Image (cartoon, rainbow, N blue to C red; front, side, top):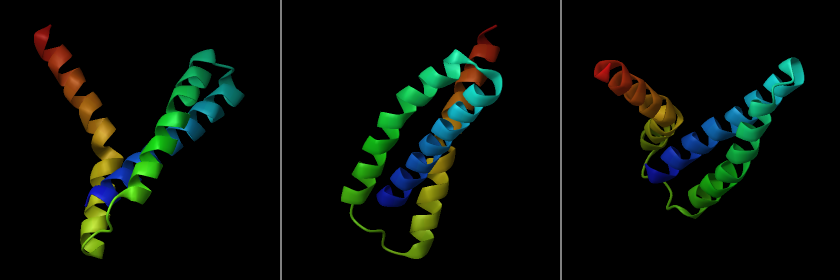
Length: 88
């Protein structure tokens, strides 16, 4: 499940890079370039760690791990927003 989680997280980070570059091309937003430059090395490190991780026990564990990895950052952001909204 670890390998699937890391591949899901890597997919999310790679899509974040693509979205940041697309945002820069369409809106000329400099913050999006900074986000893309930060996410690029992170995605490389995560994908390398995923390749070194042991293989999954079954396909269903791989799919569940990938889904959990893909939505992990969204869940953290949602939790932070919920805490901030609750404190105000």
